Image: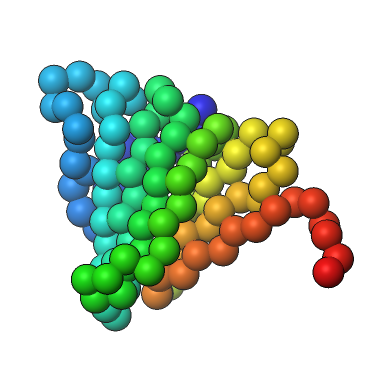
Length: 119
């Protein structure tokens, strides 16, 4: 799995990473981040070695959305003027589009299937 460096993720989420086990390198444990904008909070955690994680979205203190992420192939960061986004790509056989978590200027998500179904 290809991922950004830990410091790049900390910069994106504007916080220090929380590791599930400080005694081992972050690539072999679960690492989590969170960011809050305008009463919306995004909590992202993943395990690089397991290629899995989850994303939870909260409005104030209420969880409004949860995504379980498996078979992650790539995580990358897109940064432009006043725009930052974390993009998570999955193995092709999962038939899903990349999940995008915009963190700046506001928190937004987009995700879907890649089956091009017309309904």
